[in-house]
Image (cartoon, rainbow, N blue to C red; front, side, top):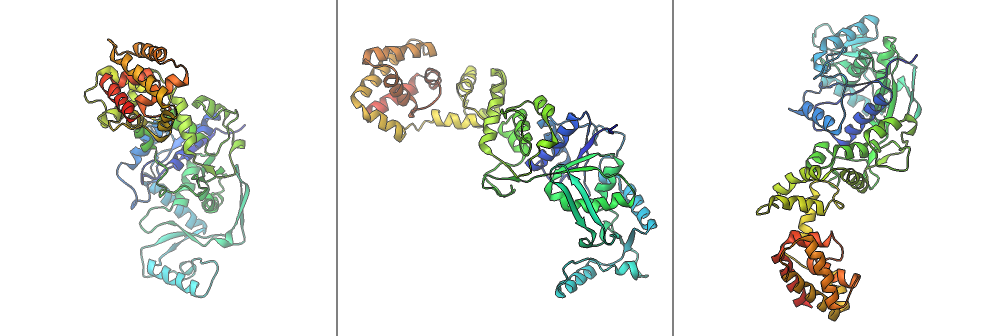
Amino acid sequence: MMSEVRVRYAPSPTGDLHIGNARTALFNYLFAKSQNGKFILRIEDTDTARNVAGGEQSQMNYLRWLGIEWDESVDIGGDYGPYRQLERLDIYQQYAEALIEKGLAYKCYCTSEELEAQREQLEANDVANIHYSRRCLTHPPTDRTAYAIRFKVPTAITYTFTDLVRGDISFESSDIGDWVIMKANGIPTYNFACAVDDHLMKITHIFRGEEHITNTPKQLMIYDAFNWEHPTYAHLTLIVNEAGKKLSKRDADTVQFIEQYAKMGYLPEGMFNFIALLGHAPVSDSEVLTEADIIKTFDVQRLSKSPSTFDRAKLAFINAQHLKTLDEDARLELCMPHLIDADVLVGKAPTWAAGLVNLFADRLTYGEEIVDLYDTFFDADFSVDVEAKDFLISSREATMQTLTAFKAELEGLANFTTDAVKNAIKAAGVTAGVKGKNLFMPCRIGISGAMHGPDLPALVTLLGRDVVLDRLKAVIKEL
């Protein structure tokens, strides 16, 4: 009988939740949920120089925003805590001392200057594998008290593990020098603490980025030293930008932090859906999926062996589809903070914002985009684009008659409602003797300055009588 599946996401509190880390957390979460297992959130805070205030809480806040909930962590406890590494220092010290007693580790008293001098000498001698000399193993000094602890790497050992994504991967121990497991300040190094924690927390599967592949042999050394059972590893492929290069924090064209997406008005459901596709192929043809769909169909056999492209157009499409599932009130609530921040609603009636959001419901891909859509069609600096102007000029006389008739119908309206505007358009067509494209296109261009746009009667109503008539007068004058 298979033991309970236990996976972990173990961030360092050194910054906000990056899209790559969110993908790692999500895939661990999906695997746990698909196997009725447990998802553990562990905080690896031993890199004290890089830890930032609020980093831990930020990670937790935006994991929860995405919809990722954990079964054990610093905030809710669990049977295998503490869940912060700095609160487990006595545990690491205990296991490091056990390795010394086994003859599998030793104290290293070398200073950083001495280690650098050794490295420079090896480089000067063109030594291929620059490893520690084991000076403190064979000739430990007697006049020093400060020491690190190094793991004594076995000779002539091949470390092999079966990766769920890449198959069998092997490393030779001869390529790895004796490495520090405990620093002189009593803080463990990443690979040592990680291996100890994963064993003690009974982690069965580890999904992480491919940059961790080279960490695996060191962690396996610790497992073997204590005769512990290895976990199963799955190293996820790179996320690349649209140019096919590794996604970097220097890629200014790609928003990369979950907090930014939340503030821009993306939906957590949309982000959850999109990130789940970064390295995992869906079962169905549709890529628009609910959390329940994704959990139900998550399968390690469908993990990609090729890099995953961060496709911004796909993200926009997926989020837009999730937006369409919102009711009018929820969509308005999503957009309101952005309209307020942009001062769009100054002097507007309370119902006007709802009308604006409904107008662009089919075009909206994220909340903040409502401001860009507003600027496109409501900008006080009105002009007709080149394509639209060419259309008007192509049949100048008929266009002039249509616009003049439309303007006259709008001027005569007692109530400026969408139904009244629809009737005004029809009446203008009768007066000008036109219908179809020859009616609607001049009217649209005269109001919006473009050949394509949102529902015209609703746009006219929101723009208001004075703005609409001023625009029509300007276009007629230009003809």
